[in-house]
Image (cartoon, rainbow, N blue to C red; front, side):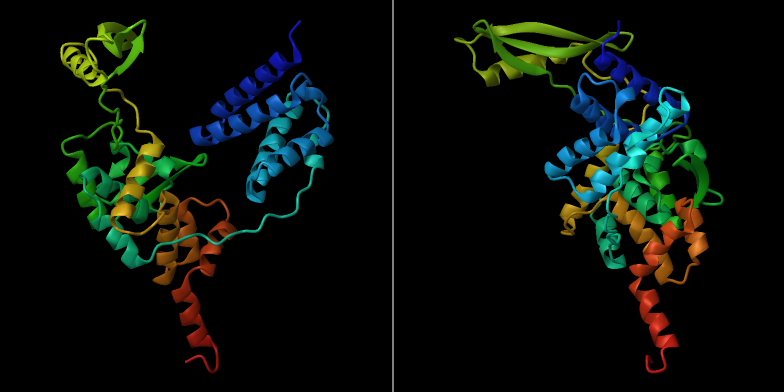
Amino acid sequence: MRSPAKLNEELVRRYQLWMTTQHYASDTQRLYFRTLKGFCGFVREKPMTDITHDDVLAFLLRESASGLTLQTIHRKLNTLRMFYDFLNLGGLINFVPPRFVRLRPAPKSLPQILSEESVSKLIAASRTPRDRVLIELLYGTGCRISEVTNLRLESIDFTNRSIRVHGKGRTRIVLFGKRAAEAIQSYAGDRRRGFLFSCDWPRQWGSVFPQRKRWLGKWTDYSRDGKPKDKVRPLGPLSDITYQQARAKLRRILVHEHSIRPDREKPPRTKSLQDSVQRAANRAHLGNVTPRMLRHSFATHLLDHGADIRVIQELMGHAWVQTTQIYTQVSKTRVASTYRACHPRGA
């Protein structure tokens, strides 16, 4: 008979498969999985089908005591609600315990934005064509970082300067300007197919470690049709050569081995693109800058220059206009111009 812990793992696995069939973003799936894995560890040998709202509340209390923000606790509760909705839909339970848990509303913070001058400094701080096109696209289209990461060249229409992107379960058309077009063409070169941003596998140098009075070198070999296989080779006694000499010997060995990672039809890691933006921000002395801040800046600057809120909603891919309206609270130009135009003594 299957143990409760194994049953819980199987339920989480099936929920992951369901999320995949529903085309949830991979980042969303990973976030949900971490929460559910933590919840499995919390309930231990108690079947998830026997959970009560008191168990959910106790889990959230433990997470809150660890220092998590109220916004994060709300996200974890929402994850549990969706998971138990799935179990209820499948007939495994008759009610949804997390739906009986209520938290006080989390305070909504205003989006962080960059000024137009700061965006110009950020773009100027780009040192490679890859970084330049990344920042131009994030700011010029308002796309999410996940949408830019998975962007394919076949989806780019240079004639109409538009891109077909897929995110949050829907496909939409975004626009880009002349400078972004020039940056894309400079970076892509003659490529016409595949992901715009190629996978950024770092060069492999292997590792050196001591074992049984000798230095060993370890690396991954790709000689079998690109399939990885770990290889280990002795480099010399600890008493005869230093670590630096063993490292140099391994480098000479790797020159003649199949240690180069094969090209793969795969986009880069989202984290690597986020790091590229931050490195440019560091060079421009702008402090902490994230791709989401560029998306927020895109919407706010459009508002500052008189764009209609419905147009911005469509460009950003928001399902509800209420989501877009938050940018009206940070558009200082729109607030100031409205005050001067409408208040009897505002001029």
